[in-house]
Length: 512
Image (cartoon, rainbow, N blue to C red; front, top):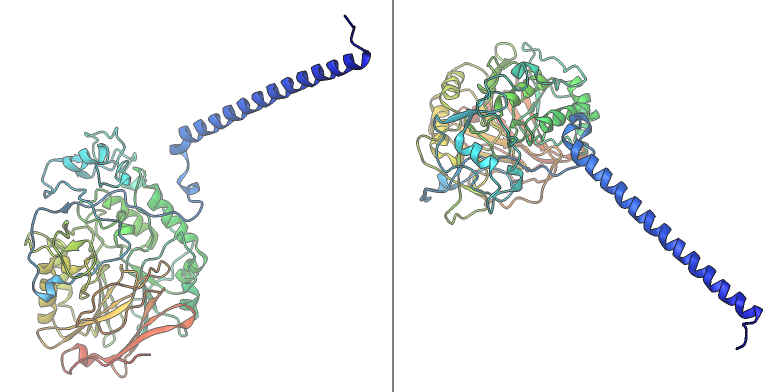
């Protein structure tokens, strides 16, 4: 048998060395992969265990999609015949997720437990919040209250000290103070301002000459839908808003008055059944530095009389959230888009008894001009989103009250819909009632699909907009305009006070 030559032996040794090298390389790769997997596992475990410990001030890192965690109590159990044109029309908004029946289908009775601040919470709602979401119910319902909530938690035990111990959301600048004796000649109005988006519209407002004497923020002034029991979403929303350069510059340049809508109330489409309204009211008053004269949770409606005798502007801020009854989901074929239909139950309310009584007293006061702020639309029809027309008896009560009140020229201001428009109806005393809807300041959507009704007196404007009211006290006339970015003017209406007092016919308006 031949012995292998040196060349053959060298080849064999090279192959053995190569196999040994390959084996070591595979071992090193295997060890590296294992190390990386262990490292990733540790990082994921760390994030999971520390997710709830993060500071609210550090949680917002960019634009997020705002989704509700609590769907208001909605009722499907009543068929409603809709045949009269006025009741069938409906204001509201386009920024709604698909409607679900998240409530018990019953009116809230006295079987109440306690929430984190000691607020009352009905047993049916608490039971639903703890259960796994049923088919058709958004996942975001889960987690509104922690699963281990103490049903017997006495009032004021969370956080320790109750409402007084909630963190401050006061902005890092001083608001321009409102002089109640000053004659107002220019008032700007806006709504729907997301703290998560750029706000170029403040450049247009600040470029106005003269500057507004007053800016009215009439709802969805932040988007802070509450998802957690420490209210961190609403807290951070206000803190972010206060840090916006354009917003803070405006706040230092002219006075503001404000009213909330659902997203600064704390929950999409919510009303009286929302359990966190006391905390939301505390944050609202702290941020805007507005004293409504009421305890947190008792509503934030208020009024201001501004100007000397003969030039008084009476501003009435209605709270359409704290006491508003459950809305009825659309369960019949209505000739417009949306999610709600009119509900004629006389027990349903928009304002609640106390606010109605206060409102009736307010409209008896004398003034030269009255502005009524409602976060949701009042006169507008042609859609099934949130609106006064969802509760037709309440809308009828409002119109009758204004018909018999003193002849103060009155304008209704509303937001909510992410579009702008003008509306008008004739009251029974021949007075004209005009509504200006202005929305949104920086969260515009696509063109409106509303059905055009006789109350509409302008096109719809879906781009960013704000309203401007110019008052000519010498001529006793108003110029109302909807304005957009870069000085664009969408629409203008000119009217003397007399046409709003019933002494003349229909309103005049010009295109631009």
